[in-house]
Amino acid sequence: MKASMLIKAVVVGLLLALTACGGMAPAMQTNHRSDRTVDSAMPAFENRLETDHFVLRWTNKSSHSGDNIADQQIIQDTASYLETAWEKYAALFGRNPYIPPGKDKIEVVFREMDCYGVADPPDGPIQLNSYAWVRDKGIRQPTSAHELFHKMQYAYGYKVDWVPRRPYMWLIEGTAAWGEVYVWGRVSRTCKVDEMFRDTKLDIYDADDMAMPFWIYFVQGNKENPNHALMVELLETLERRKDEKKALDEVIQAHYGSVESFFASFSQARKQGFWAECCRAPYNCILGPDGKDIVEKVKGLNKKG
Ligand SMILES: [Zn+2]
Image 1: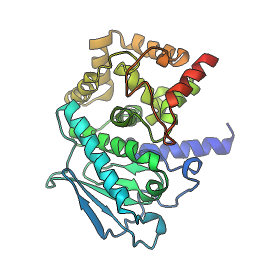
Image 2: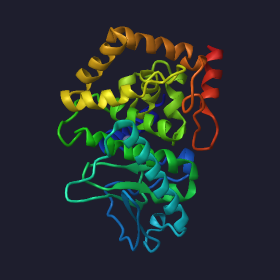
Image 3: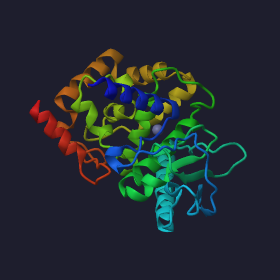
Image 4: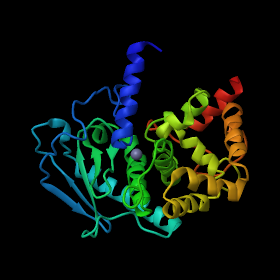
């Protein structure tokens, strides 16, 4: 890796870590690098759509053209994606996503920024990247589910009742990426599925949302009958113990025995390909933003050894 690439990778990593962004809007996917960040001033929103659990706001009059969305259908589609994700999470967890005190719905805003989405801080709105949203249809479903999963994490006290300790992004971003697959069977960036297998030396604690395969492994999504209750148990244990490492260790020990052995078995599976076995939807076929199945590609990587 060249020094400039290394610096870029570090900067990108830091940005992701600092903002809990749901994926950069990278040149490789949108051919566009935004100078707008999550800290840039918010445009005024003259449009509003209210659904059962969300209030969506957007503009088509911003002087910064990347903020604008002219097609209301895009907003309506997104609203239905958010409601679908809400239903699936609420059904699995038996609990609703976090809504800030004094409000009865989650606010969602659209504007251009340097990542696909943000749901941070807990009391803030879900922010979605209007520029990327208009141009890349394939990110809309997974990014909606990803950002709403952060609101599930807040419902279990993350950043509300307990403060995480590093490294935690692999858990927080990794499980939010798991939410993309759980709800839609697709991800906003292919690297969330294949990077762990492509680069078997990538440290899982540095992998952020690319640690997602670990969480599929954790719920046995590579087996015939995934155990999604483990994700519920993980969040409940996090709420009780207020410590990522202790909570994860507790759940792994209760279901798999030795924590060390579990991580070692995942490490081995990364090299051999845990998708070799049969498994059920949504994990047997995971689509990238381009609509192509990434799991088949990963199986191909494994065949090459
Ligand atoms: Zn995220």
